[in-house]
Each structure stands twice: as C-alpha cells, then as structure tokens.
Amino acid sequence: MMIKETSLRRDPDLRGELAFLARGCDFVLPSRFKKRLKAFQQTQIQNKLEKKPGTPLPPPATVPSTPQPLSPVPRVSKVVNAPLSINIPQFYFPEGLPDACSNHEQILSRIEAAFMDIEDQKADIYEMGKIAKVCGCPLYWKAPMFRAAGGEKTGFVSAQSFIALWRKLLNNHHDDASKFIYLLAKPSCNYLEQEDFIPLLQDVVDTHPGLTFLKDAPEFHSRYITTVIQRIFYTVNRSWSGKITSTEIRKSNFLQTLALLEEEEDINQITDYFSYEHFYVIYCKFWELDSDHDLYISQADLSRYNDQASSNRIIERIFSGAVTRGKTVQKEGRMSYADFVWFLISEEDKRNPTSIEYWFRCMDVDGDGVLSMYELEYFYEEQCERMEAMGIEPLPFHDLLCQMLDLVKPASDGKITLRDLKRCRMAHIFYDTFFNLEKYLDHEQRDPFAVQKDVENDMPEPSDWDRFAAEEYETLVAEESAQAQFQEGSFEDYETEEPASPSEIGNTGNKIATSSLSEKCGKLQSVDEE
Image 1 (cartoon, rainbow, N blue to C red):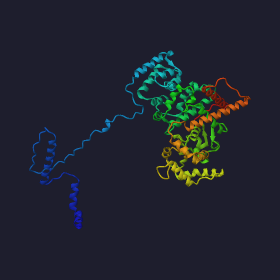
Image 2: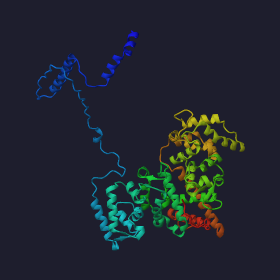
Image 3: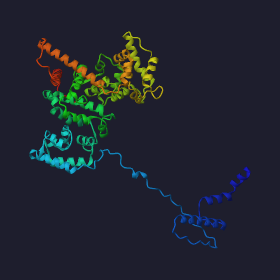
Image 4: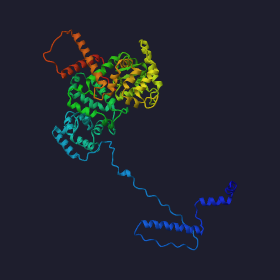
C-alpha cells in the first residue's frame, strides 16, 4: 500500500490533474456530476422559499442537452447584526455629569443683575466674592474666577467678559471639580500644577480673618503658600505625577475643605492643608536643621532630625531621588523646603497612604515593586549595629523576618508588595522596624494588645500627623513664651480676671509664632520656593 501511494504521488499526469483542480479554473464536469449539482441547488432554493410564505416557486430548470461550463456559485456573505454597544448609555463623563434640569440662562441673568449693582459693572477681586456666591460657588473661588476672566491684566472684570467666560464654563463643565480645574489651570490644560495654586492661596493669606497677623510678616507668605501647596499635592495627587486631575479632585476632600474657609474664622481648626499651626511646626523643624539658613538642608542635616532616629541608609535612599523631584537633590545633595514637607509628614504619620508609598519607594532599592528579603536585611543590618552600640542585643534577622511576615501576611511567599502593606494596616510598625530605631524600641515596649486594639478600632480619630503637630506646636509656643518672658524679666505669677477664650489663646500663639519666625528669619530676604 505504501508503494502504491508513493507511485501515485510521483505520477506526473496525476500531479498535473490535481494542480489543475486546485487552481479552481473553469472546466467541464461530467454530466452525472452536473445533474447532481443542479438538483442540490434547486433543493436549496426551494427550502429558502418555503421559509418565506407568499413567494411563488420558480419554474423547474431545464438541463441543456449539450454540456456547458458552469459559472462558480457566488458566496453568500454572513449577515452581521448591529453591535449591541450602541444601545449602552454613556457612563463616562470626564467633565462631570450634565444636569438636564439646570437653566443656564437663568444663572447668567442673575450674574448680569449682580454686575448691575457694581459701579461701572466692573468688579475687582474683592467684589468677585459676591459674583462667586451668585454663581453658586464658595467664596474663595473668587481669585480663580478673577484671574480666568482676565482681571490680572486690567485690575477688574467686566460683566461682558465674565458672562462669556461663565457661559462657556456652564456648557462644557458640569461639576465643581471640572469647573475648578478650568478656572485655575493654564489655557488648554486639564490638570493643575503647583504654581497654579499660588493666586488662590495668596488670596486666602490676604483676606482670611484667621491669617490677619501675617499682614505684618509678608516674608512668610511664600513659605506658608509653599507649605499648603505641598500638603495639597501630598494628599490629592495620588498618582505622584505632579499634575492634579479632575478625577483626583473628585476623590479628595480639597474642595469641601476650601469651602470651609468661608465658615471657619479660626484657620487652625481646619487641620487639612491650611492650618497655620502645622505650617509653624514644619517650618521650625526645617529651621533647626538648616544650619546655614539658605532654605536647603544636606544629607548630614537631615540625619540630625529627631536625634538621628532615622538610619543613614534610608536617608541615602531619600537623597537618591527615589521620592524627590528635580535635580537639586541628586546633583547638589541638597533638599528643598518643599521636599522636607513631604519627609516630615511621612516620618510622623506612617499610616497615611502617601506615607506608605513614600517609604516603600525608599526601601525598594532595585525598583522592582517588591521588597525582597535581601532588601529587608540590608536595612536591618544598620539597626543591629546601632542597637549593639547601645548595649542592646538585637533580634536575629531570621527571627525578625518571621515576625514581619506574620505581621504583613504577604500574598506571595518571600515578597512584600505595596498592596500587602496597605492591607495589613500595620505598615508603621513594619517601617519603623527597619529604619527608625527610636520608634522601633517604643513599639517593642508597648503592649501588643494595645496595638491590636488600635488596628481594630475603626472610629474616626485624629491622625498621627495631627497629634504630632498639636503636641509640637504647644511645646514650641511654650518655649517661645518662656524665652520672651526671660528676656523681659517678668517671671512673676499673675492671675487674670477672666479666662481667655480659645480664639484669643490661638491668636496669641499665632502672634508669638509669627514673631519667633520673624526673629529667626530676620536675616533672610523673601525667597521664591519651588
């Protein structure tokens, strides 16, 4: 059988005939094959017509006596139904969900009426507050509105220019986040960079009643504004891109907090972003480390923070550019005040999601998105050396590793990811173990049941950063008060007739803090921060 098949394949006549058939050319079929093909085609046509009632059957085809070549049967293309996706309603609205019930012309008429009450129908930045309220926006949107309508160039905003601006905004932007981005961002940009917040925050400094004492200290306006901007990006810019999008604004509490400025006269009660007390604590900590007072600190300066509690290896990672932007840190080995804000908040509140990401980037030496056992051992080696220098017997790395794996419970054996650390809710203990000796020893001496209670407690409490800032502010103000009394020579005890109100105490503390900063920075001129 194998010999016959081989001989057939090698037969040149057979091979030629097969090649001829494969080409699909017209050729004459034997009569018996033609009859079978015609019968098959006729049956197919009848079946189709039976499915369509009311259609007369065609007459039977007659087979010609002489054989003729058949034309190829046309291929019937498959009927493609319309895609179902056209029936799915729109679900993604990058500029906010449009409100079909809103009457834009009614809003514009109210704005026009509000401009009629202003002299010459030209509003300055202070009168823009009334216009902002008519538009249904918070008071401190007035500076972005004023700037977007061209008020910076002329010093005022006319009714025509503002109505044209607001008409365009109402037609294209449908929620507060989208409107805020449009007002504050550069032309043709759909995101906010750090410098975009300066006009808004300068207006807060100039007009908020809780910051009136800063009018006598203009050199601190830029420092306060820089602090607030860094805190905004620390909390809102979850992508670490340096560009805040409308989606990130929607997911944050920034616009709600900005609206609270109108209602709360004591700005220190708004601990998110705007608190002057928090700025005072951050700036004083930076001032203590900035030995030459050039608004930059070196790696040696940063290592002195909190009595050298942080390890040298983690500080080297910070200065390597793992968590900082720009070339100042990498090339010149200097950290700016803006970068120090991120460091201090991350150091004092390691439960914060941004802080967890901050320290994960530092510990991920090879940048593969995973903390390997080699990286953990690399950071723990210095901790062991420091404990041995203090006469403390360190726990062997193998035993410590078992504890940390039980603490984090990583999804993959031998690999700790960022997701693992966020899920375990014990990231602060994990990080302190590897690069903050003082806090690591505090955790070791603490009751483990108290730690577990903190994890299971879901009640809203002040964050670690809020507690730290409040304690440090009280300490700093007490030290400055004692120093002022010592210089005046008035240490006599006295009693006041009526106890001071909390607002008076806060204003007094702010004044002491401002005078202290003014005294410290008297030799410095105003420096523009990055």
